[in-house]
Image 1 (cartoon, rainbow, N blue to C red):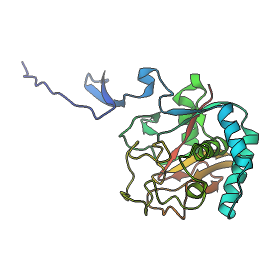
Image 2 (image 1 turned 135 degrees about the vertical axis):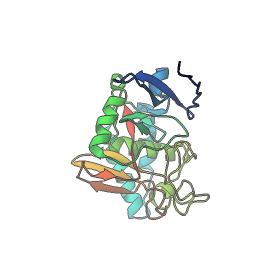
Image 3 (image 1 turned 90 degrees about the vertical axis):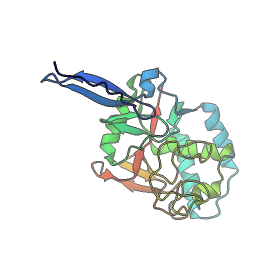
Image 4 (image 1 turned 180 degrees about the vertical axis):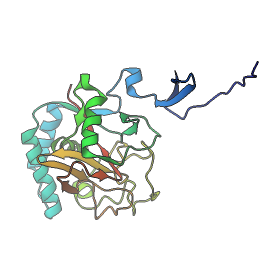
Length: 247
């Protein structure tokens, strides 16, 4: 009889192996994430934005005066966002990871990049359909950014003009000059990868890449920098989608 050898495989952090039998009787091991789907808590890495939060941003906005075009542009986007968003939502506060076309959230894993906007839209809807998951639009993202200024986690200058002082930008202190793992560093109270990957969000007529990635300087591509694109099939390197939950 053939001698069998016991093999113990240690899965990476927040991952586990699933076993299956192939068509020819072979044993197939598949590495899958210990994602929030397993625990049932799909909002673990999401921050709720409430009517009270939006009111705080509205009050703050009235008092703001722009010093330059960048600040003026950011404040205008926030103003338009408050007009468009009249509902509560939860927005991801961690960069997503992707395995076998499925989004999951876990610290210390590879950031999901290299997908088109259409692929992000599809994956986002499939993440938690029971929670109304989808790709964030630019309005929802900018309200959250403004709220972090209101809560004194950021400043208007940092968000609109020069984000070099914190994050993984090329010229940030301690920058690795490479794509860091999810949750590697905190910026503005959360580990959502500012200066690590562009943020993909939808907008009317297409989508937008917001912020910058690790090879950008923070004063050229600050957190609130926006580049619009109308080609949803283009593969976006070093870009990760931002998800929201609507219920």
